[in-house]
Image (cartoon, rainbow, N blue to C red; front, side, top):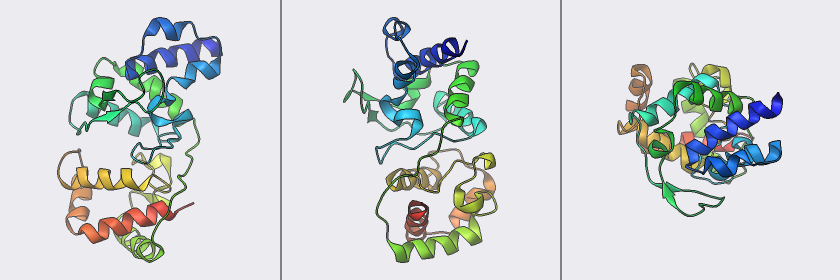
Length: 208
């Protein structure tokens, strides 16, 4: 029963990544079944690529909402590429990856990743900027992103230990309107400048 469940998940991931379903169906064990999903976001969603977010451990609602935003093109879909697997190096974007996914498929993918561990990125940061960023977070962000942005149940993503280059991209998308944003969050971001954003990025990147 468990193997069938993982096969279903892998078929969804195969659709997400544009991989032949025929090849996926012949996979012999669970490790191979879930490996397809790692082609962009790393094993169990623990990305080792600094511009690809770590998604293991995110909440189901957060993941589903973002997949829907990509499908509806409510969120920017910058060009990227497959990081491993048979299509390594080929160009793609998230809108193309999810365009054929249904709501039930999105939920299955989200449920799988939500059960994985969020593995914090090991990266360099500026200690002084991180201290300033903590002050900004405590004053402007903690109410919705509790405990330094480390609680999945907030349904607001997990920023503590997230890759810093990805966080910079996300803040840029929010501040420029390329990504859906709640009114109360927009009001907070409008009061911050680029230096504040960089301080926040260093704070979140410093959390181990």
